Image 1: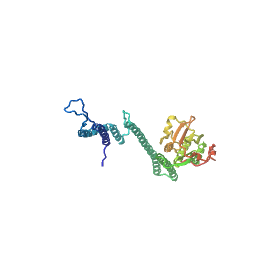
Image 2: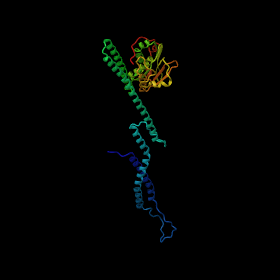
Image 3: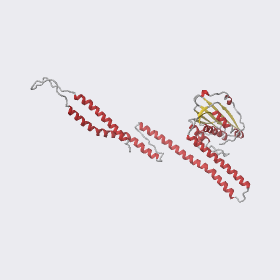
Image 4: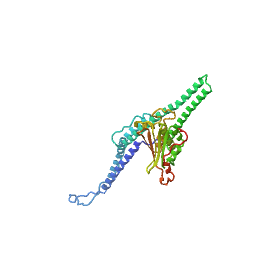
Length: 386
């Protein structure tokens, strides 16, 4: 069953209000008039001397007139209610029509409501902001899909070409085929890392599904166990100053954030160089800061590094995917963390992630943790994974 339109309901509501006001006015007028009594002046000449009071206005006539007035008021109230409702709903109809056009695919259009500045105008401005965010989101999604398709197609095309060349060579021996297989494995490894990074990025953008209380200092230590050898081979010194930094979040996503920050600091560095990793906490936030030496980065290009597949320079070792800082940004947004980045005057980048502290920080036992604040030299470990 189709319900009444909003204009019909508003018209009935307005008409009921007008009609109730009319009934109230008639009651306030009729009741006093019904008791009014007319007096005959005593000095008026009359056939007989009659003084006193007589009947007031006829009750029957008064009731009939009131009933006629109420009947006439019904269509008048309905007409006024319909007119007033239509006037109030006119901007809403314009909003609905434009929103339908925008939702059909034209995200560039806007409502652009002008005067008067009322609640409907504020609703229009809110919808314009929403459409702008949707347009930016869809544009970023299309750009990301195009870049991801290109990045996934490149190793596949290289693998196909490699195999075709190896198979087409009639003089190929065991050594040639072994070399081709090794190159194919390298291309497959690159593709595997890319798919894994895309999955991590998608998981980060989906949001936090579970939260656990954890110490970012311990997460950093865990990640560094598999990065120290790579830093040593590149001649990069690790300066680690870790204090308890307890927050709440998804352990896997936060470990991915820490790993990508450290990998980015080691990969985009020079020899000799250094990476500084600090954690600290206060009553208002928990902070993780990763700074590294390296080439100078223009300030106007820093924000672009947090977009997918953005690279300052070609990756010579083939390990960079252009997704590390994009994953960091997605994880930070999923945890409602503040991410700030700045270029170091001597070269390199410094990135700080600030999280909300976990509850009951006063229960944290810092005994034995203060030793982690000492500067630690690099020691052998495992290779980087991303």
